[in-house]
Image (cartoon, rainbow, N blue to C red; front, side):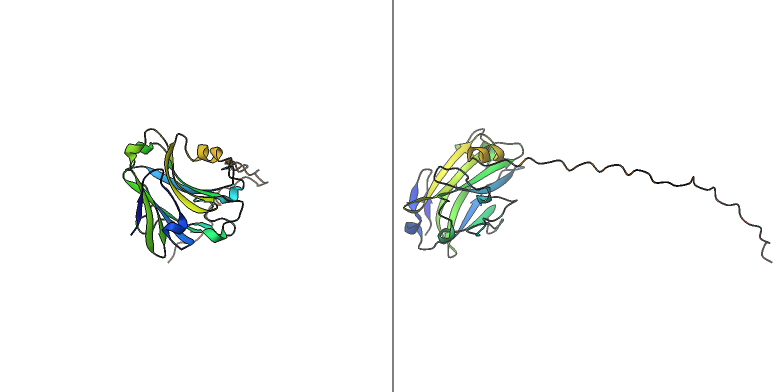
Length: 207
């Protein structure tokens, strides 16, 4: 039976499940809005010390594959695989976030959740609704954090900026999108002027 968490609830992962190879599902939706759901692997100072631990649609796994983005499945908008015993020692917290892609605000979302599934069984779920937020464009949903052992916290904290602001908040570098160079117009090569079509040659009409 899954435990229902409220915002601020925390527990040792080992109290929820003996498993360390976990599925994390996020459900978040609103009519006409799209969301980017990401995981930040943070160090002891809650900073992204290595951009390779920012797991999102353009970078779907960490170098040793301890954190992997799996895509939408089983009713979840986005899902992850987290293998706790493969996470490098430098990473002390995993922060799961959802940000709006485009216009809108978090107060518009319907009922959603973040859940942990171990061995196919849901072990904990933290549910939230748009009424808990106002004009925020991002929300920190839940954290796995290392405090002698790995633990899970239901966070549910709104954040005013979008994904770029959240990335900066965690000390990450925002990659500037470089415009591709405009293709140079081809320099015309030498060519004589086009000939007029040759007049038809004489031919007798067919008999």
